[in-house]
Length: 119
Length: 107
Image 1 (spheres, rainbow over the protein chains, first blue to last red):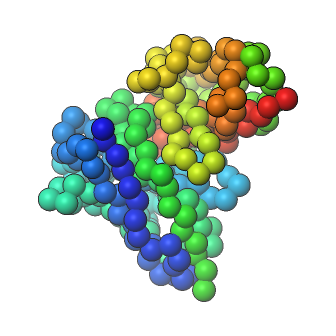
Image 2: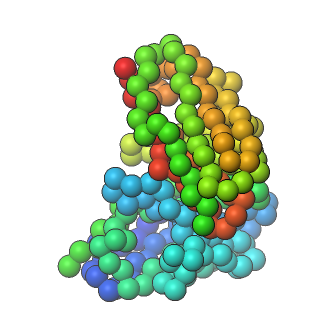
């Protein structure tokens, strides 16, 4: 069965770039017309959708983060990645990767990884 | 951006009883609404999509209703494993948005 696993830097200094990767196992990132998303949850707050990428490479980003976000896909490694530039303490959160069904809900999620922005 | 408002923020219910959770959208999202269950330290779990269609392996004790702006998640006969935080999410308009969650706790 398909599984997602986040990895990357857990501690990022202010104004630097947050980088995370989501490894997809048990299935291909290129099959089925799914999208591949990043979602985050700051401590004590709700979920915020960051953006998604299709296997074709097309992307859509949340306008609130669009100027700082890049999501990319590596089909050869069956993974997709998130880069968030110029981070501040407000970017401290648990970051999840998730598979999006063609109609838009998220049916498979990673366990999440806590990223802290601090000097 | 569509704002999703969930109520109540916390719901205290005894095991075996029914729980009813509400979600309201700031504008119509048709039936493009999903519900998730989230337990601490775990990945969120998709319960329902299309407002009322259960996801794979979700028991019939979970049901959803509504369309447009008002939605309801009902959990009949609560089991101890059902106590968690529940989120609604609209996917009718970009950016996709979530409610702030309802914490379902044991009474």
